[in-house]
Image (cartoon, rainbow, N blue to C red; front, side, top):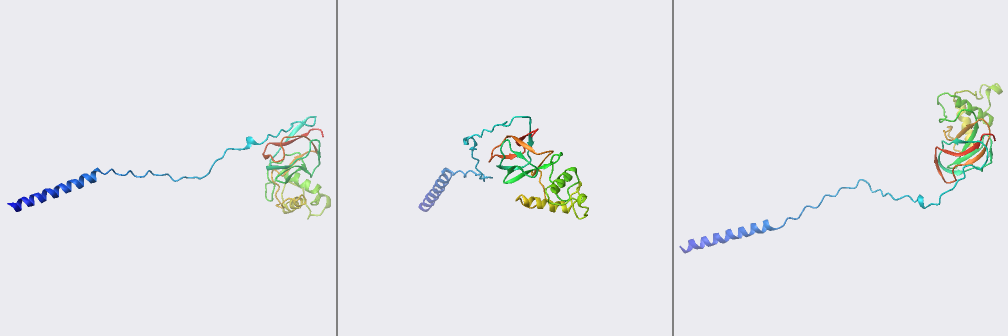
Length: 217
């Protein structure tokens, strides 16, 4: 009988221990899973523009009296040189400079509207360019010399046209590419006198107008 009671007591104590352990485990608060942190897709920091802190540049729009016309600009970059109002610009010289590259005045009635390079499609703008290259002395005109190896001034770009462009570029201190970019040249029927400046050195241009010229220089 005593052995039976002892066994019952041991069994009850064992059950009590198991219950205590289960309660202890279930009563322990579970730590929450750490929140998921998204990986940033960019570390770029955008800072406010400081242009408002810079002193504004006041440019006088009309400085030479008389009817004038704004010249369209196709060069892109920073203005590094400008003429003075009243200056007379002749063919073959710079109207202004962008990124230290001169924008040259050439004779012609058709506006420059594209890049001119070897194998470009034929056009009257090609003939205008070739005529200027002849006038500037970078190539001889076959029609004047009778030499078939000289340049034929027409609507077609030839290897001789390209080499003449390279010669012209080198004479101006430009990189010799053989390609005349849209913004490298401005065609006008005659020499021009500067009437007004619409930008200042250091301004960034992309299209628009850099200056105006008198219609009757």
